[in-house]
Length: 279
Image (cartoon, rainbow, N blue to C red; front, top):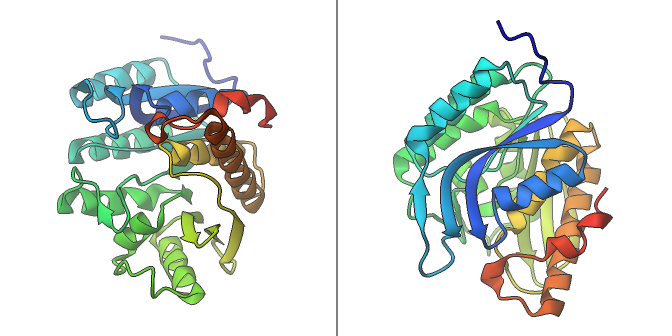
């Protein structure tokens, strides 16, 4: 019997793809979570040379190897203070993640689900009706849910009509996400002219807005930066609104420095330049 204790340091399991170039997914989460003094333990869902925003890329689906990989973690008795999920490429992967949460989470584990399903009012091409249904089931596990507006609408069966949405409509969507089972929700990156708005809601509290000045272009990986900070802060028991404010400000500052370097939007954000400021 293995009696070695591997659980003396705070750990977050990050279930997401690995892209070698483009600054997204695990390549972003690992250094950010590490900077915030938590061990990051990746569970790869697939391997990409570059993310799918590039015209051509190498892709290796890791689905059939995920469970044997995870079983080795079970064998040495790993437990996690946080579990962060990102892009999942198939219904089978969603099932594996559901099982992972049931096997590894306990009362002291925070489940952070970034339901990477779509953007600009449409699901991603890989997201079938069945996958959307299964993701709705998976988010029942979430302690913290970090959808964008498109994903929030999909999860709550709300027609995507942002031109008609008023503040009360955003708050209603956030409340519905809490009703699904999440303790805390942030609907991220809603654009309002020169401002970007996040809708924050916690169980038992009224929803509220957090706005900041918009800078630069849309860039790959900013959602991964955001969710990694939220995940690490949740393990440190940092106030949720304070965490959203910190994550939003860091993303903004990353975009600003990336604009100064004139980096192509596909290449993500130069978070390395300011990672040392993140605390």
